[in-house]
Image 1 (tube, rainbow, N blue to C red):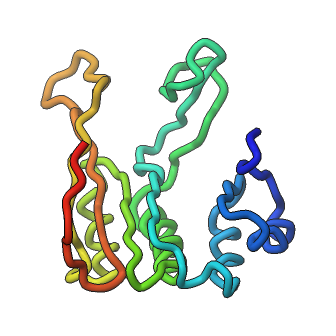
Image 2 (tube, rainbow, N blue to C red; image 1 turned 60 degrees about the vertical axis):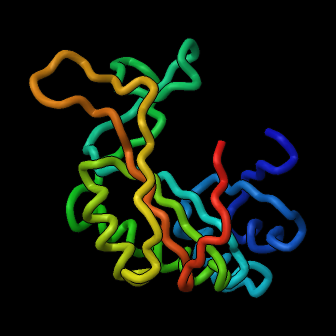
Length: 178
């Protein structure tokens, strides 16, 4: 673990919040968000948020020692995470976190939410509710390098979406290209 990765319980995290410029918390993000939202050092000052929540797939994803940089659905491997929430439960899970994240963001802050095409439209409506429809900036397409299009009938899964919102009305002053 590097100097910025800290595994803490929530009370310990609250005491550490002002001692480090960069932090990585491992644990239940809802509890950490609640604590950070009540911390005047952080609340209302976060300029950029990127989240990659579960995609509501109702599946377990795994990894093994030979494949540590890739998470898949292989049988017999170690479970990396369970993505088992569906429907209203999934949207409630995401809504709670988005509201807390919004409260943490600065007035000039922005949020990017990486999601797949199956739930992306529902998540966009949810984000419209939390941030406001006028705060939606763009739907950024992320084309997959390895789309895992196993033999099947139908169209391939070749892209994900990144929903980009701002806290207040956004004015594009320059475009960064890479």
